[in-house]
Image (tube, rainbow, N blue to C red; front, side):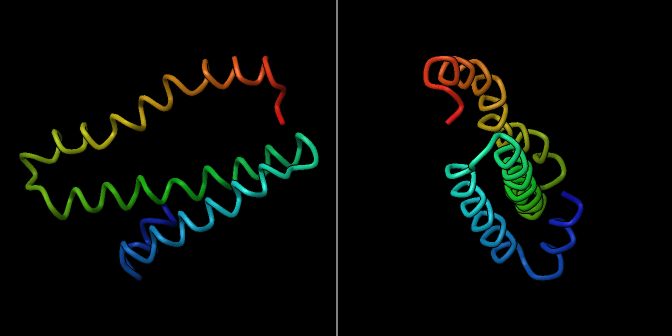
Length: 103
């Protein structure tokens, strides 16, 4: 996330989010065709590093748009989808993995 913040400040938020999401999609495709669990874990780690650009850029946009008084409320709304994914992802993923295997 520290790297994305510097890139976002230097080259702009739009380019940063496009690069981060583009690389995220590329690593997503690599995950789909991972030949082993070791490769899958490596590509998932890289995927996580790329998707963190959305968090950094999103927080930067909130800081640009909202005044400091409104920023806490806006940040809370921004994090709701992320927190829902963290809460619901492991149980759903566990059931799917159990039923269908990791591939």
